[in-house]
Length: 275
Image (cartoon, rainbow, N blue to C red):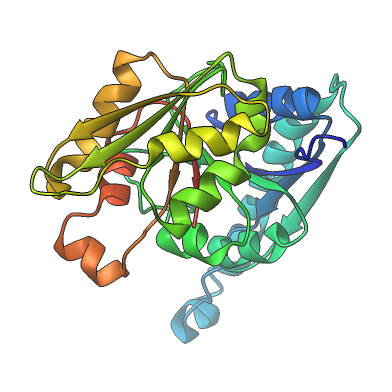
């Protein structure tokens, strides 16, 4: 029986310099997994001129259109440059209009993995929002904006709790776990909990897939889970964190300072998320 892997990867394209390492990372993953690369660029929306601006003949709409076309050409040039020597099965350029979140949700239905940028100073800006993480049916690989050309997924930490989101994230990440040189499963247990860690059970599940994983548990209050997971990531020098996203309602996450929000705001290595 052949190994299930990623055969199509959708990557966020923009005209920012940070797009280059993101594209190179997506291309490396495409070669590793034998995946078709799809670059998606979402065009900027145009501001409709006011009646006064139209009467004054300001040419605002024409200027905006020209700038939007310039930025799209710039983004397409970056994409073509990076993918020109791509050794995988193939690649293609796509454009979308409207709200970026909605465009990525629409296109994500037909791929295996999304690769997008993460600015930890503004984790809710542009694509990185609960609408993408919750709205898409596919896993999302978030790459730090200032991460440079770092390896992705050779030493993996998987954050575990007995939840639908965590279980789905680990199964969605199986191609990464198969190709990793080390996989560490970390579970966090509240100090007052009588519940035994279940990381050993998920390690057995992975062993049946031919993946050897070590397990550990951390005792910490719920409010410190995000910090504890990131400390473990740094201790193990991991280059990928795998975890479920938004296990609670958005209201509850906001009230309790949610683990997902904390990690998105502090992470400095790639993170693989499923909801």
